[in-house]
Length: 225
Image 1 (cartoon, one colour):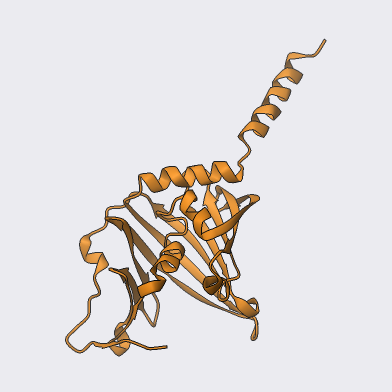
Image 2 (cartoon, rainbow, N blue to C red):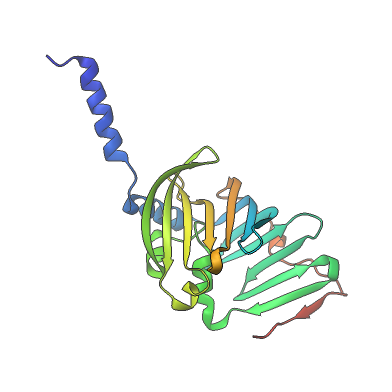
């Protein structure tokens, strides 16, 4: 006769198999998070790896997101000795460097769909939207910052995006459907690894956060090419 202990063990293993995350389950969790998304705030660590010199450049700061109508707005506050602010709003990307009193402005224009798809990776973007812009493969589970995540491999469908970013890897919180970590693999073996912590969804964010605090001395420059 099979013991009660063995029956419970078999049942436990069966439940674990049934609950094991899949690509569809991860994307559904992202869909649910996107449907309710309004604001988010997180601390970040960006590690930019340059293969030719085999070196990392590390930057830290805080990033803010909010939904404005059908669009997602973003402000990244980079800390350190050379601070900068990166604002995406109204179809325009602005990079403000207070030390030199300069704002670089880039009009996203016709590329806004590709840019938006990259902007909302894991923060406000749905799983179904992800499948529209990328070929998505589930790579298994991994624990990031003590959080169970599902790893997704993304191959951009846009040839223009793929020429600069051949692949992207996302680590999605299996409970909340948001990104814990992102790896943007560039050409020549370079990559940027972004790890997020102290994530708040939703977050109480003042409207003033999504505005550059420039001065009368600030120069606005629009690079071409």
